[in-house]
Length: 161
Image 1 (cartoon, rainbow, N blue to C red):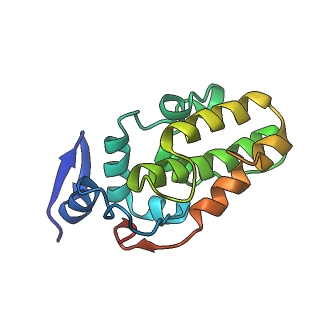
Image 2 (image 1 turned 90 degrees about the vertical axis):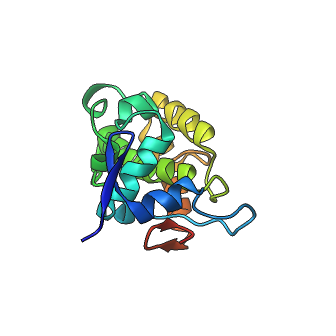
Image 3 (image 1 turned 90 degrees about the horizontal axis):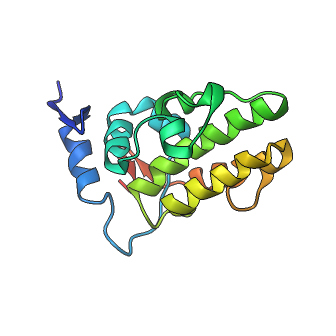
């Protein structure tokens, strides 16, 4: 049984928290990223990164999402499935954006945008209300973020481990 404690009100394994507190990887190390699947199956790492990010744990608090997405947690966003129309495209985007947000906190040198640029980009893409832009924007569209999330190098305790 692993010992557990809380960081910012979230339970985290001691080892995962120590890795995250240390910055996950040494400066100058190769950039790595983890997928939505990794984060939804490693809730202790996800919770510790959300606490480290300091923006709250919902799509509304991180990305300014409104309507039906406002109160969806980052953890729940990792399981969104997508579908037809703009609503389906937003699900795909928010799933990729949730993992990208966690990756940007875990490793600032990851292959995707910085945390600030990610948030601004997702807000701009969502504001278009256009399915093709939401999925294909070259800066913060779902496909670009998904590709960055799938770069590899995700270890047992997160990016670069």
